[in-house]
Image (cartoon, rainbow, N blue to C red; front, top):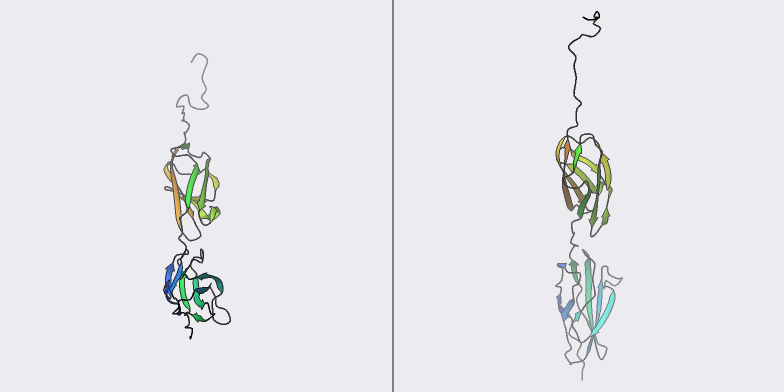
Amino acid sequence: LHDALPISPRNPSPRDNAANQSIDVSLSWQGGDQDGDDIIYHVFLSETLDGNGRPYYIGQIKNSTAYDPGPLTHGTHYYWQILAVDEKNDDALGPLWEFTTETEANTKPTAAISRPSNGSTYDEGQTISFRGSGSDPEDGTLSGSRLVWRSSRDGQIGTGVSFTRTNLSVGTHAITLTATDSKGATGTDSVSISVNAGNTPPTAAISRPSNGSTYDEGQ
């Protein structure tokens, strides 16, 4: 009897040219064998094609039309193809399919001010220490120009993890630390401080006697 070829793999999932697929996507297709033979499905999946225009081999599975390739890479274009081989070593190669994985979600960073504490009060001209931190799930610890300090009264007053200022204007300041990650997402923390006007010394004035005046004894 003539042995029929395996059924050519078809109806892929993800569908051909699908976009925004999860990096945990499972590959599946329809197949089978007209004679009821066992089928070994050879799975080819890669970002590039070999010299024969085929993706690179990653594994095989028996009598199942689904394959888990494991976590893929965000924002990547993949080629994939299935080769069905029956017990008699007859084979059928499915079409070349493609899909693209979703871009990685960007989690915004966090900012934290450790100095000055909220509600602190300072005299005009007093040294004020500023210290804070920034952290991002993707970028890690942030520093330098990624950390920007602003005053609601004086505008930008510094950058980085720490610095001091002695010239903040008199009044109440909302101090905000903004952390910015490599993709432009931001996180903030704020405290309120007050700068009081300095204590001006009193003045004294002598109106009498006038400077250099001369008097007789007993006068």
